[in-house]
Length: 279
Length: 279
Image (cartoon, rainbow over all chains, first blue to last red; front, side, top):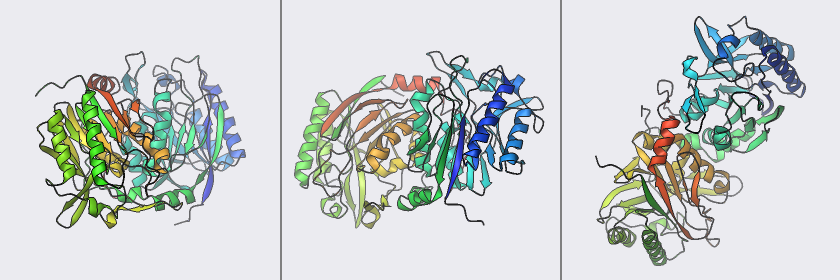
């Protein structure tokens, strides 16, 4: 097995999503190029970076692999810049079904993995916010951990982070980083975004990258922003506010090993005591 | 089944632990009486509330059930004040073994449950803090959820909270509150205390009460303090700073039901995808 580099640079793209798909693809492409120019070897995008987060729009924006223009841009940029791209998510069509999917491309432009959101966001807050993804979307049925020369990288999408079991499964599969394209809103964002990203990192002693679109106050669903990279001790390495921006920050695997060595949480688990069952 | 009350008062005791056991028992007894006088129907104490947190002292302070004087005080106070007492923890001796144990008494003074810390704190931080409970203590082998007229209440002790699987198991068994006697220190406290209590509450949509001793700068192990009650949305209901003090705060089961109804995380788990295995 090849030795992992001790440190490498991760790029996170917080683009402002508008109603026009072509504009979103162009913006994302330019921002990926900038992150690569700043040294990022792995670049991650936000959830629904090519489409406003509105389930009525998903069918019209959906693409089939490998033909879609968003998918094509991601593959071409990965090859052109010699980087790994975790393509946030886009609406993906397969036969009559639509998924919320993250396509992952390697530096030769080939598809390495595809994560389909496993936990669909069906909530009904009494103070107004209601969203029911399952009206339009099908759910994925696999936890995704991608093998790269920078370490194994898990991918979840937004609501997937709400379930500690999923991040844990990634850590147990050897992930050093969990990438989370997401679109928290102005209720869940202030309440839980930073808290959740930090805690999954602390519990699993790996890096967690939350990648959100920039805030667009004109949208029907207003996202929180605040993309950030968190280290395995729960410290925020770098974060954005609500505006468009790029993070290029260090993933330090030496630090990860030190945290796991000094504070061996993962080894202290009592698997004999726990249970996995329905409520 | 008896209907649970919609709201009830929980008392949390943050006493300052000194070297003299008798003083610690007296202080705790007075503070329990004060919490009961303020209306608390369930009262919880901190980890090692009768003994400085120093594993060399545990054998000398240890008590056997039912004879120990700390154990006797807890049982008598529960009966005298007609309350439930979650007796933080004390060193418990059974034959040649010592455990870090929480004794739980009901309003008739009888023992309802006994939780022995399941995850022992063996860490070696390079910047100085080293602690190895397993040199002196044996570990418990059961997750503890106590049935009370106020709802089911889970009990963990300190490092037990580090393992999301344990809090989750309690939620799956129907707990509405997790009580955590603990003694985080000046490294883990600022880094992770509030974060962890809040996140276990959010993930499991129940109340979490973290109960620490007050800070004693003269002790060999200086604790963080900051006892707090967190609600099922992750909001801090009430908290203390580092000094001695008492919290009497409301556990609102109506709020718990509303959070679970509007944002049904526990129902959205995908048990088909997760795994429970060793690292």
